[in-house]
Length: 192
Image 1 (cartoon, rainbow, N blue to C red):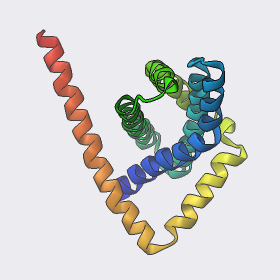
Image 2: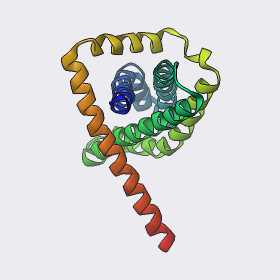
Image 3: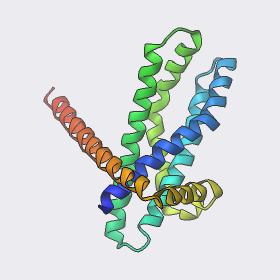
């Protein structure tokens, strides 16, 4: 039960804070990208988003593993980053598919080109994630603590808590499926 709670929390925080960061950071970055016709502006906005979301998730993971042994904590760190990476990949692929399907305006071409930089964002996320784990003091600013307190407040309601556990189970199945797909793809590539 604890593992589903952990996965659901990481996935919820990744998706929810990612959505909020899109509104606050990426919407203005998209407007600037359209004005200056430069796809790198959106990429820089996504780096800021990765910084914020990584700090929130690490803040949660550190709070969750506070009383656990070092070995168990390291396993949760790895599972937390992997869950975040899968949700991040899912979110980016959904955005990319939406842009490809609706290429009506010239800005859509610039946005599609801007998504070509997304492969570098996972590296930035890993760097931020590692930095925050090594130097947890970097997560002690207002955004992670507010998000953590909001999450705890929402989990105080039993209905939301059980919905979160069920979603955690669904996310866990999706993460396992994603892992098997990557493993199958790696085997196919080795055979070629």
